[in-house]
Amino acid sequence: MYSREEGTLGDGSTCIFDVYSGLVIWDGEYRYVDVNAAETEPLVGMSLLYGYRMQLDAIEGGIVVIQSLNSLS
Image (cartoon, rainbow, N blue to C red):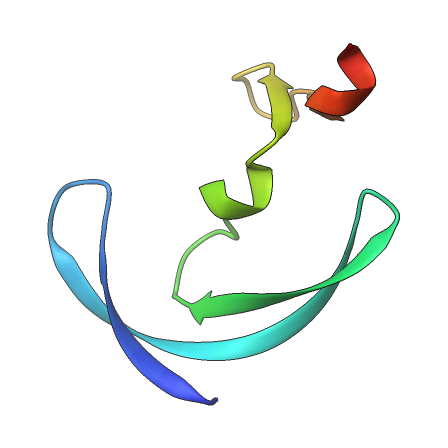
């Protein structure tokens, strides 16, 4: 853990998160990201998705497709 931060949840309430540094491979490149620890299902932050299109089937086990907007032009 390298810090603690307050975050706003989807319902508007706030919570204190432990924040860690993580390394992910995103679109074939290594990127350092902040990881907020929470007792819930894993989530992807909007800052990681910036510049990408995400399509999903909103059902259990549904397909999720994430494409770079640069690859669509």
